[in-house]
Amino acid sequence: MNNSDIRSTTRSGAFAATAKALESLGVKAEIVSGTLPSRKKDVAGLTTGTASFDWKASGSTILPGAICENLTSFGAVFSGSTGQTPLTEFLRAGAAGSSGTVIEPFSIQAKFPHPAIHVHYARGASLAEAFYQSVRSPYQLLVVGDPLCQPWAVIPQVEVVTAPDSQVLEPGARLSGKVELEPRASMPEGRSADRFELFVDGMRFTSCGAGQWLTLDTRGMADGHHELRVVAIDASPLETQGRRVIPVTFDNAGRTLELSVEPRRVRPGGTLRVAVKGVGIEGAVVFATGRVLGRTSGAEATVEVPADLLGRGRVAIRASGRAGPQPADSVNADPVFVEVLD
Image (cartoon, helix red, strand yellow):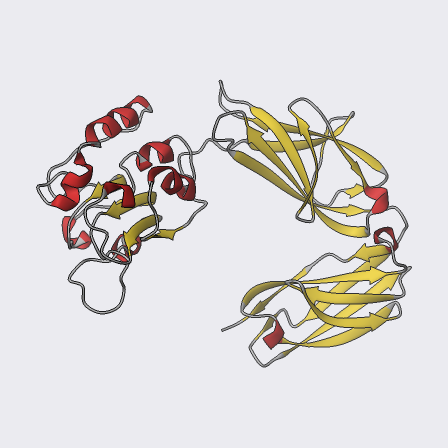
């Protein structure tokens, strides 16, 4: 948005070059006079400069994922009366992210996002990456929004097959011994994956280049439930990632552990009854979000868990049975999800 306010002219010198760069990416860009676009139904990004504005009165629609930001002195001051519109006005209207300064910055462009923020975003950068690349002096700037939002990114679509038989690895598959996995990534013509990484239960386990195999030796790990996450990293400078998450079961020592929780929905102050029943174990640990909720001895037991230990919302209850000190002496139960109501 181009107007005579110093809040706009501070950055207007870069508008033409930014619009040209966006057009080269196939993204329509306009330099419009005023403070807000009028009756536009496809605002995918906005750079403006004004003390105050009324988005609703503009009649325009912000598309999901948009970065919209305004250069003014107190866009991130939410208490008291500054006479300026806070950045949250854009978020209420549907923007994925915005920014504002918390103290008087003066009209110094380096303290605010350069208009090229929209170029970085359109190339596939995440919202956080786009801000990072466009603000030279961020010390007074507060960025608010979804840092991982990347609506313009070309995400690799990941598939995992077992080698050498090329059978698709499906959720719930049972794996034992040493397993060779062949990761594959499909992308538009001209794009390709550079490498793959394998995570087991959230921890990076191994990696391989495109066309190579991931080797997973399950024998040193617990029997039972595990989460495999295969991440494809594309060969572009942005290294955009795509992933496939596959819950599987390791089966080497014949140990099993069943977990049941009642009730599945509970209010604060309530109690959950958590039962474990295992084969080949001496005891079990029940936990959620990294907190131990109870310990049992023997192959079968029940513990009562106060709902107040779980926080609010959807929570995964987990259990691990032990038969010795080594990871391979353990077995994991399939997690059970409960909801703690407000």
